[in-house]
Amino acid sequence: MEFKTLFAQLVVFFTKLTQTQRIIIGASTAGIIAFLIFLVVYTSGGVSGKDNYKVLFDSLSSSDAAQVIEQLEKDQIPYRIPEDNVITVPAELVYKERIAIASLGIPKESDVGFELFDNQEFGATSFDQNVKFLRALEGELSRTINALSPVASSSVNLAMPKDTLFVSEAIRPTASVMVILVENRVLSNKQIRGIKNLVSSAVSRMHMEDVTLINEEGETLGDEDDTSAFNELSSMQQKFKSSQEKKRERKITEVLSPFIGGTKRVVAKVTIEYDFAQQNTTSEMYDPENVVRSEQSSEEKREGSKPSEVGGVPGTVSNIGPVEGLSSSKTSESYEKTNSTTNYEISKTVSTTKGEFARIKRISAAVVVDGKYETVKDEDGEDTEEKRYVALDESQIDAISSLVQQSIGINSARGDLVSVRNFQFESSRAELVPENSASKANRFVSTYLTPFIPVFKYLLAFLLLFILYKKIISPFAERMLEFTKDDEEMEKPILDMDDDEDESLVEKVQQMRKKVEDQLGVGEGFNEDELKYDVLLEKLKTAADDKPEEIASLLQALIEESTAPDMDSGKGK
Image (tube, rainbow, N blue to C red):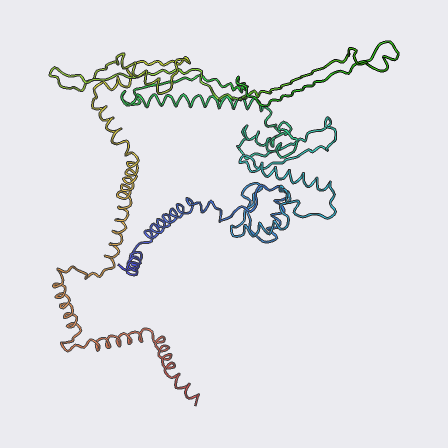
């Protein structure tokens, strides 16, 4: 069917409706269109976008916000203030206005960093440069702190003492930091220590304890660093202990569940005692086998005689020396000396051992397993629905204990202990009771119907819509169609009949025509045009008799209208 034909049929159908029906259909159509617009626009976030307005500036101070608004009004730019210190403008003007306003030096109270040194001032003193450096450093630190998600804005003030030549009189720099947090957000202990560490690391000779951190309410943050660090360490140790215990419990369950009959028929609890004390040990070991590193040897030897000495009574003999033939007093001399030095290298090994984070002192494991269930046989030796509980024997318990020890690494020398017990579980005991019809129905529902509950929800919604259509919409439409049919029947001519009555209708029309001709006195040579002329002439005579003045004025108007062209042509001549 073509669109034009369909549209024409809809127009014809709409023209045949009553005023009430048109109002109802129009209101229903408008409601459906409004609902569709709501689904499309609101769910897609089109309305929440607030006419496509985007943020121009946020987190402005009161003075900066006033200057921005004044500039926007001067430029005739529409703006909105959805919340405090936030200004939005149309999306297509965001970047243009942001650049234009920033070129005017607005906002002025924003943090400045090392861009202060982009423009060098002629004649600036060292004091000016130091102040600029301090402002730049404070601004850079504030920008970095503002990058934290809980921080809305921050302010950093540094106190830099003058340098001195005397070390004993040196004063360390200090810092004060104020943070304004986002609503319903707090700084964690790690973040507080991180901010302090950040500031102290950026300034020479500053320690973490030299940094004071407060919030917008004036409360000092990080006063209990030691206590917080201890609590955090304790929490971390407890989480580590719990995770290791859960890990070993899962191992026991995974090892035993295949032949026990599932994870629901075995329960394992593991307790681990840890020693979290960390010890650092430094040891030196000397090698008993010496190695010669260097050796020195020196030898000294001398031989000779001592000259004779002249002595005696002063006189000639003593002056002229010894006389030949006389005994000589000359003595001989021999000297020898040897030195030897050997240096030995003693090898030494220095080792430093850092204690592990957690040392296992003892592991205790308690394991409870369910027994076996055998089918009871009747007198004929055939299986019945009844089952019987059978406890595990000692060899099976020992095998389970051995598996548990090997799976979690039990060390008997360390004092580890594993206890395995066999008990009948209450859940399994309930399974021994023969199922009745109600329990079977519940099991059937939970097994086969529960997974399809989401599908049933959609089916229920479809069923409700179908009932709504059948009970409300369909009867209303049928009633509307009935009203339309009644109107059509009222507009049809009285002689509109079915096809079965066509022949009788023709005969009746012919009879009526013949009767009219007889009454008018016309025969078979009847001319319909002449009859129409006679009837029209008769009507004009009757009208002239009833309203002669009107007929006269009408004839006069016709005469004037017919003679008007001739008069115009005469004037032209």
